[in-house]
Length: 153
Image (cartoon, rainbow, N blue to C red; front, side, top):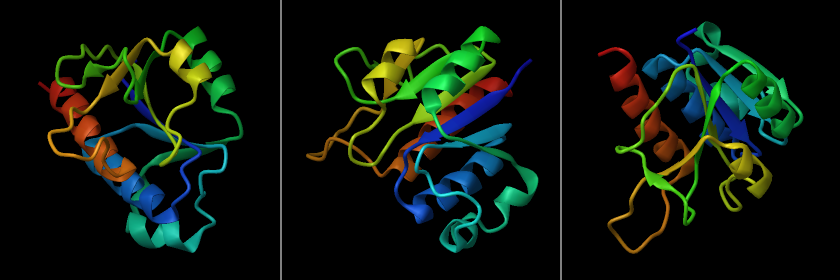
């Protein structure tokens, strides 16, 4: 099983969700989980921003990301969380083992501590400017393309 899954945990912005779906499809992700309060395909703003990427992408809603992580770990899925912590590793230096689940979190509060504890690796994008983070859709795209570039080499 050489799969790349993506989980959006409590993303607030429908536009971000749509953009992430578009990028996930374009980068070759196999499935996207919309978790918690993340807007789903019933939201017109998601559909507008995704530009029909949802038509060729497996998408599933889950109420609780912790249950999803537990389920996928039991199937030997490698869990990566994109978050800035003292334990985060530069996304370019991380070793990505397939199959994997990449988790991105809420625009304000990020990935929850419970999920971070269950993650096999916590990765970050180093910031060069004064801001300490990127928009979640932009950050997701950067990391998905890094993973995809290694998958298809």
